[in-house]
Length: 151
Image 1: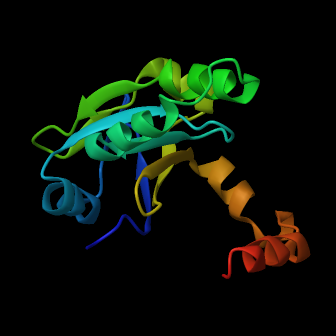
Image 2: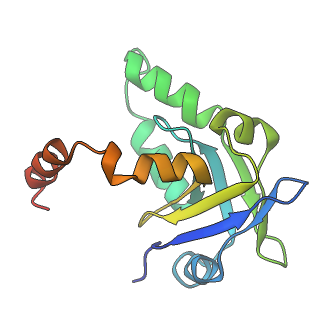
């Protein structure tokens, strides 16, 4: 079954809305049967994660039994779950990106929406360009890490 893939360049309108690309909306409907989403902070990067409702539920199930006394779990819940907002695409395929989330991720007008198999990421274009620039990647460490996963 199809997964989220691709890189799409868009802008936010003055109200903070953007279009979810048509190919990604098609996957939402064909694979998940819904246009309901959750948008939240990335746990590590200055970007936003957008989950289909079903994938969000799976994440909740994974996190729920983890010990709240673990500092990493506390920080993860605070960063991801406390900021999460439900949303759904409107008739034009747009979502509203809440102001607080935009501010936290440093997202301005020019954005990039990236498909990452089970979720989407929303980046400020300049940050995306910086993080994906091959000159900014430790290629040797990257290759070693990927080989550990058989990739």
